[in-house]
Image (cartoon, rainbow, N blue to C red; front, top):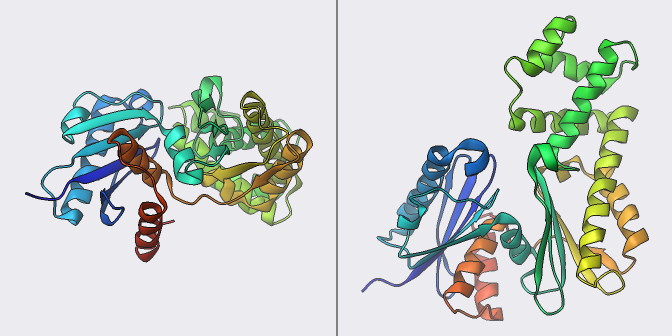
Length: 318
């Protein structure tokens, strides 16, 4: 009889990752697929992405079947058919998996800023609360999408003659080629720029900020503050504002670096003076795996966690 294997999937808005390990935390396989958000990309695309991620991970593990799979999905909804990916499948929002991966069982919060944004925290008793994660129309403050949207607004003001040129506007012109009002409107709306393309503009903002562009720095400063206010509200709901709490920034938008992180820390310290910003211990797909262990009744002891951490480091996974 083959050994039981467990898996976690981080199904994000742009990519999906699957991690397979045995019951002791030894990594057996890692796989990847495309967008896994059913709400934004449709069930067919999401199921195909989840299936590809599992199949490539299973091939790496040389396994036939998974004992328990936990799917951590952006948008919470998982596509029909995903229940066939393992003997037992559980699912939930991606934020708790990212939180468990980042902090395991320590009180604190993770503030995710990728294509979208969300906060998730746990109190001293392990109670988990999620805030944000409402998508591009109702939320996503401080996200790559929000940063890209502000850059587009800057470009629109420049087209009206209300903004001075700088590194960011030069990069935006090269990306969008807005020769005139009609060309800019067509680039943005005909068809509408996909959410991922808007979020990708955040890279231009980060580059311009490093080049000294004041408008770019203002955009990133506001993004950092927005995220700090969100996570401070969450810590208040968890009764952690006056207690020691770990806070982990996670997601691609944070690659903007100090221009976003410094105002985030300053704004957070005003509301939660004992909060401490730290790095995540595990990536979100490992957090999903830890939830699979929990659902299967496996205790997250130090030996399992250390083994998992060592194996992931050996594979260059952070």
